Length: 257
Image (tube, rainbow, N blue to C red; front, side, top):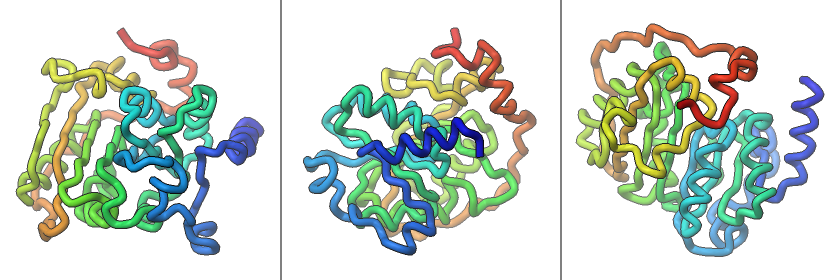
């Protein structure tokens, strides 16, 4: 592990808004804030919103800045990336944002049923060959409903035509109520102050001329979910390497015009 990553991990250990609970730690000691996020961390009863696979935490921090009446928690296993958002939140004294380093598969170990009101999934790996690893698959939706309120909201923002088509069909097949559905978020004129928060990876896709897809739906607690049985064409492009992105000015800046 590089010296820079080690430095970030050491610094995150000092942040009061970061909880690092990989599987080994969770098994050994459990999670003391489960069911107590409102009373013991946030100190209020405001709705809790998760960003799953939060990366650098741009959406977590961006949403928390815009909605002080809600609480936001970014979740990712990559601690060195999460450091960026966590440090910003600490520097700005944000009391409605936290970060949780763990595997998303374990998320039900950190929240009681109904403790979460909304979930954001921003630019996840589409996992084109592995259904059960897709963050919008039946497997994961059944995990989310263990912690979501009944009828809780799920937001998917993605560059992937494959993942968008798959998720759209899954939602349609199971009759889940759709609130927003667009295959070209910025071209449609639907993007608002919330949806225009652009992550590190989103800037990459926009610079390459790709459209951003957005789907927002509600997940009830009772529908027996089924996987769609359809053939979907695989995405034909690949992500640039991180080293390339961090040196190319099109992707390292704050915005792409």
